[in-house]
Image (tube, rainbow, N blue to C red):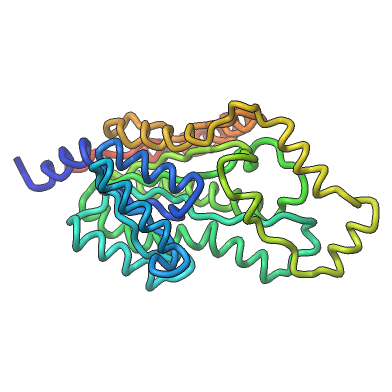
Amino acid sequence: MSNENAVSTTAASKAVILVTGASSGFGRLAAESLARAGHTVYASMRDVTGRNARNAAEMAATAACDGVDLRAIELDVQSEPSANAAVEKIIAESGRIDVVVHNAGHMMFGPAESFTPEQFAQQYDVNVLGTQRVNRAALPHMRKQKQGLLVWVSSSSSAGGTPPYLAPYFAAKAAMDALAVQYARELARWGIETSIVVPGAFTKGTNHFAHSGRPADEARLAEYEAGPYSGFGEQVQKAFAAIVPDDADVTGVAEAIVDIVSLPFGKRPFRVHYDPTQDGADVGFTVLDRLRAEMLHRIGLSDLLAPARLV
């Protein structure tokens, strides 16, 4: 058996996985679930020796108690040197990187006009440019391996219902989803797969709303709160909470990621929805992805719709 085939066979049963934004929420759940499924998981987060020291210690305790390979690793997606260093550490320790789960993200809540351009830029930096930094660090290794998988945690807002007061977050997530689609086409001939997980709205089980950023322009915000949108932020959050079923379980997102990783090459779905609120994104994305696929057929590039098996 060749070395390349050996890597492919090993990766199918035990993958080396990097999960970004793994200190809490979807990322934390996915990292722990993937480790319990038998994979080597690098759960990345900022400041593992400072503000996230407790989270890193809890993961070490989980690894020891459950007998799993779960490793907290320093990675700030807003820093190219940090992304490069994290991936190089993974390669040094494990010899390869098979899967990247793009989960790191941040939410901002409030009227769009009251956020400064710099705040919008920060949203894009975390949710979009962060994935680019990590890709540029990891993809050279995946292309050399002639195999790999990118899992992108998107948002149903990109093709489903979009309640107001979440403009910076929704805009950034839509950009990230569009980037994921383009990467899928540009990596297919390298044998690198793409799966996009589309969660719906969750008001419990994650820290999205609790830790969401607020507008920096207090004067503009005050104008909205004193005008026809008085109390609107609370109205939106209550409306969100009302449509999320009581049994909505955020672990379903982590389970979807585990299921994707467990599938063999060529069998992984391009897009998976987990949306207890059923905001229509499954319908919207079905149409949108079909239109995009039809364009590739028309211009003779339909091979880009499925990754090639390289030998």
